[in-house]
Image (cartoon, rainbow, N blue to C red):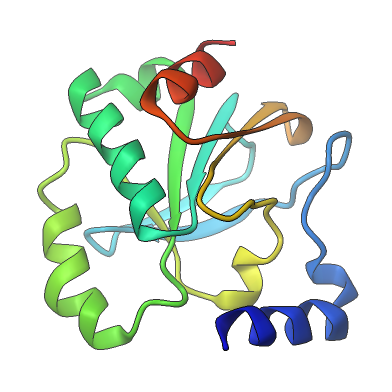
Length: 152
């Protein structure tokens, strides 16, 4: 059902087509796991995105091992698309768990906003930017691949 709904939304919303290399990404306004508002007028050098629970767990495991302050130090951000998660699950389980992480998790809670970003099933998306221009997209699955994509 989720895939059908996403396909319908994509076909009805041409502007929701995923960003591609060479394209300029519009500024983002997102809340983190504590409800704090973040405005990203200029994209960080590296944007890490997870669209599923399993890929999110891989990213969080990797980032937690790097310690507090890792993302700002490397000019990166982590975004988790939780738009498909039921609100009860988000509030009762996901957010309390995320609040224990030593890193910031920016949250996409609007399904259409999530469709703007490139994704592959069961993969982590790692995007590289120069200013707001998308210069590279990698899809990875393991922490070793994630580390390599981030360090490029």
